Image (cartoon, rainbow, N blue to C red):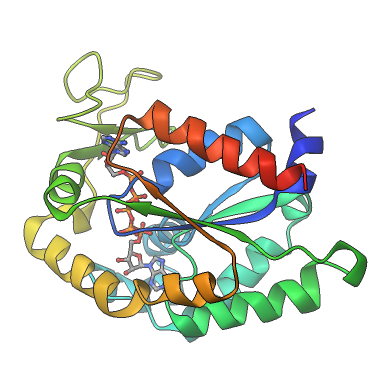
Length: 232
Ligand code: AP5
């Protein structure tokens, strides 16, 4: 039944600063609705790990906390969105991040993904969290290199220090979760991504919510938003 619900949910875009909880919530939504989470950060990190041409270009940029140039991302995102598991809907986590990317996404969805009878613009969920909380979330984040589960040493610690609850792997910290890089990432968000809220607000697609609450509470609100959207 989950996939049937997802068909009506369609594309979802998660907006919000680094550390707002986009990935945490996107994973829960993906599980609940049976649609894929597409994180451009994860896709890029995978390219870096494999040493592809894109990964080599992106690595130094990501380590500085800057945005990877738009034109490097479009092919990667288009290839992923054309995969069959995206047909019922998908959750974009970390894309779009610039006005140009938002325009590209609208054109892509219009032209390629949905025929006219099934036109379905994305629902855009903006997670709002204050700066001090973001710093704690980012510096405290750890993740499992095997299954991808995200933890936080301050807020959601694993049962056994530094080990994944699910598979026992040693948890790792992301390279860009160092204080000096975090400052750059938050600055890039303010300058390039925050204005996107206006783009989506003007099109009547933005739903903002207070994400300075418990994970489960935020999740319940998001499910309510998506269910009421699907029922329209
Ligand atoms: P990306 O991987 O997308 O990172 P980000 O946007 O900086 O977001 P994060 O993954 O840091 O945070 P999140 O909001 O997902 O939070 P999470 O759920 O993990 O991008 C990395 C880099 O790739 C960019 O800097 C850029 O270089 C490049 N890039 C990617 N996309 C790009 C694009 N479109 N264009 C150009 N460049 C691009 O949670 C964080 C922590 O908080 C966790 O520890 C979690 O456990 C905890 N937490 C979550 N929710 C709560 C809660 N409610 N209460 C308490 N703790 C919580």
